[in-house]
Image (tube, rainbow, N blue to C red):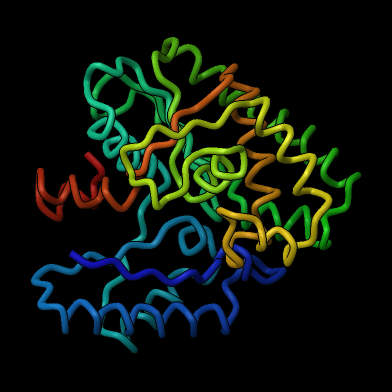
Length: 287
């Protein structure tokens, strides 16, 4: 088994017309070509290529997807937001097991926030909101360090945006376990004292609302370069970690969650699990 990653931050590279920039498209093409080559050289028999929020919401999505296919030979499938949420929830359920009861899961990506709640492998509620860390950094917090007044306004705006969503999620039933996935939550948990990744995936890691508020007060006064020096925050994640923290804070506040357990499995594992369960058609349908 091997793992290779590349950080593109597509959600931060949208122009004023809502399109992915040409430079962004070039990076996507190059990365897909590189990873396709890695898969081939590794003897991979099946190749699944998926795109999420940044490509899904871009005005020139079809044009970019056509370019990827033409220049790499790879068909890049775009996951609907609800499917992205459901597949992530599947991974969380498989990790925590049936004994966890009703699970509430939060996942913050670059372009979107996914919220799910359910007692089965398929959640009762699966929502995808355009509240990703990269998107909000681009639209709300372009200064470095972020403008404090803008942070205050963004906090109020997030509370308003999440009000109706929180009502829907709460009506589904009280969660027995609140969980969070994604690199953003893992980084925030590490900043509040959770075990490093070197400790292994089975070490319990949590993020509390109190710890999160303290971290926001600290990192929001720092430049991205300074944040990148913090343990648990990569140079790629540093520019958008403040916005991600604000989304995490607002989501937990809206849902009345005091702490979340960090799950090491997320969308990637959900895709693999669904493929193993039902084949490629089941993956694309998210059912």
